[in-house]
Length: 191
Image 1: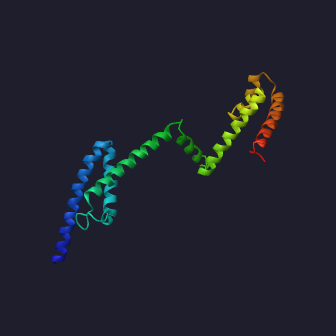
Image 2: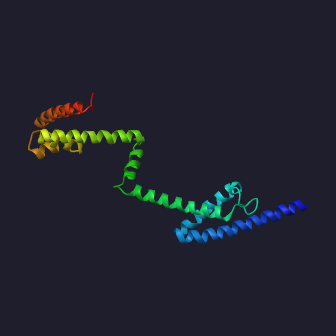
Image 3: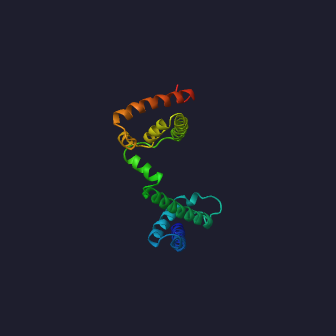
C-alpha cells in the first residue's frame, strides 16, 4: 500500500503544479491576447507541456515536470503562433493581397506554382517587357497595342480606344506579334 500512497501523492503534486502553471499562463496570456482567446491558448500550451514536458530534458524540476523556463517558452511560442495565424487571416481577407488571390486560386482548383515556376514566370515577364520596350521604340503603335493586351485589355476595347474596326486591329496586332516574335528570337528567348 505504501507504493500506491506515494504514487497518489506524486499525482496530487503534479496536478497542483499544473493548476499553478495554468493560473500563471492565464495571467500572462490575458495581457497579450483577447481574454476569450487566452483560455484556448493556455489549454493549447498546457497540452504541449503535458505531452512533451517529460521529454524536455535536463533542468526538469521533478522527473514529471519540465523546467519553468521551457514551459514559458512553450506559452510564448503558442502566443506567437496565434499572432501569426491572425496576420495570415488578415492578409487573406484583404482583397488586394497576394494571399487572398492565392486562396481564391486554390479554391478554384488552380495549384500554386512551385518556387521554380514562380522564378521562371517572373523571368519570362521581365524578358517580355524588355522586348515590348524594344518593339515600342521601333513602332509606337505596336508597343501600345501589345502592352494593352499584356495588361489585360480586350481587343474590342483597344479598337474602340484607337478608333479602329476590330478586323483592322487584329491584322495590325498580327503584324506586331510577328515583330515581337522576331525580337524575342533575336534575344534568344524563343528558339
